Length: 325
Image (tube, rainbow, N blue to C red; front, side):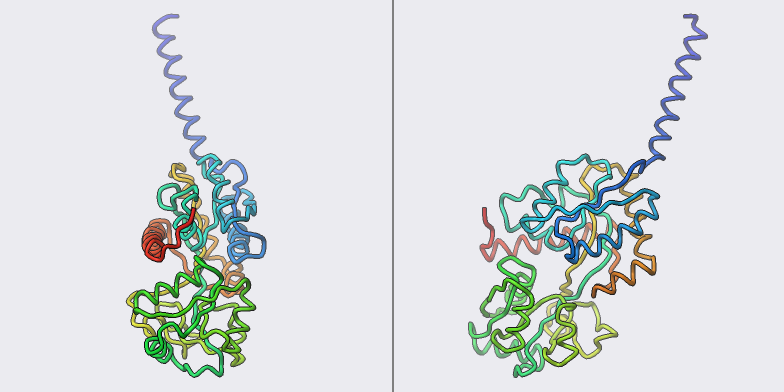
């Protein structure tokens, strides 16, 4: 081949390669995106994921398919996600359990800060502390004073060892040097019933399941997980007010991650798409309809929250000796 022809051929090949790369970069996503939910249909994580998937699909102009992989407190689904390519086509819906599980179980196959890249947080449900209407405790101070004066006599309902409802109370106990007894329940309904009847002294669930009982006067809410008092619940003090624990805002939140190593373009488009979904009135209405509040944090801010909360749970779980094989 003549030198001039060789130069033209090489130039054409290089131009084609650059053009093809640009086309490929612009093409993401070129197929449907899987939104993997590590919990069963109907769970809070699942319900919110399905609502967000609708808005995300609109932004990406590709179908977003929700796939449930439940089991072992979210470990089954997370393990499945880790076997998939880090190409942005698998997004994982997460909640606080995503950070708690690897601290509880030595066999957990992932590190939430090393193995995943944060996208956005979209919603949160405030946690509350409730007592029965006939309980003598009118305020959080009343309850704290009683526990201090009667160590080991007060009891609290939880969803089981290592559940967020358990760990949050253990955190309060640690911060305020309190001694109260954990009573695990298999269902929220049973825990609510025994709190109403004063069989247990208090309970710390997310607010939506107890909202109707608080409104009807069967339960009394002593604190709410929010930075400031909620307009809809102006008489319920925040945990910061009620306990004096600085910056303590316990919530059950919902967000999204992808595998570490996912291309930056895919991360950016997914993050933008989730942010877009959160602005849609139909998405906001449905999220608020299940008792959650919009609590949007973009990827960098959410990543910082994940690191901070993971460190908190790791320290607490190790100090309590709850880590298992």
